[in-house]
Image (cartoon, rainbow, N blue to C red; front, side, top):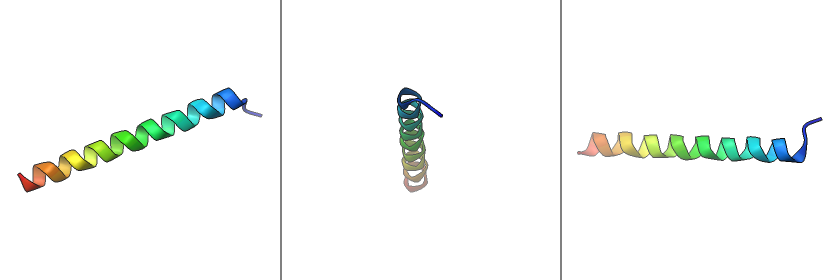
Length: 34
């Protein structure tokens, strides 16, 4: 069973990935409109 610490690390990683995806999407949209 995973420890609380490893779960928190996985959640933080998932949030980082979401942030990266969001940033990339915004950059792509910006490129389209420029």
